[in-house]
Image (tube, rainbow, N blue to C red; front, side, top):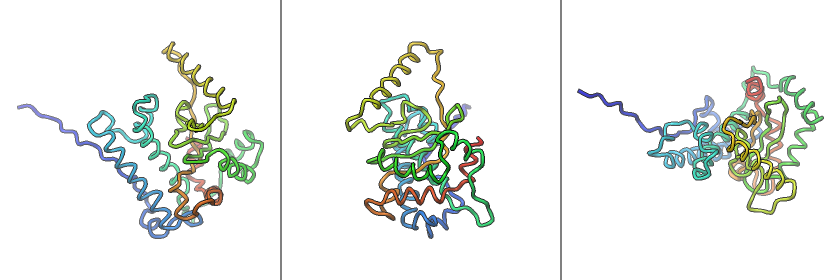
Length: 257
């Protein structure tokens, strides 16, 4: 008698947060009301997960985690719809993690290692860097997108301003520029450089691109992340509140990993 292994299709669901009941009722202090939190996490994250489940149904991707789906589809333009869903889910999870409230008995300070790296990379202290980030986000992300503070393979700290659902993990899909609008000469040269690097790798399969970055801080800049609580024209206030109330225990752990 033959035995058949039956595999159950994976349903993508919103990751469980330990404090979810309290967060749903009270929101995140100094950042989100209960309505604001439920919009950006409970409702929108579920919407993305449901869409990803439908988009991967019947394919080899249906049992993968969103992170692995994002990496698997990043180099495949014909799967951009799946990439954007998976990347949005992963980015939003990183964002909510780094603003979760800290327990009363826990300290919440950036590590001295991170502060030193910031000063080495930007010649700014943390308070000065926060002001710089707020100004640059207002200038560089006009529509939907993400801000990331990342650590690269050389242990340097950098900004990433990503359009739509770009990812910090694979540089050709950072989506640093909105290609629906005119780009300047520096942006064009950057795109040409990326094209050359990828072309060289395609010619020589043994030549691997040494490019990776570890996201340390994530900020959701999509409309649903701030409009319910802050309204139109107050995104900078929202960004400032996020930067003033980060969960440093989560961020420090990302740096050490």
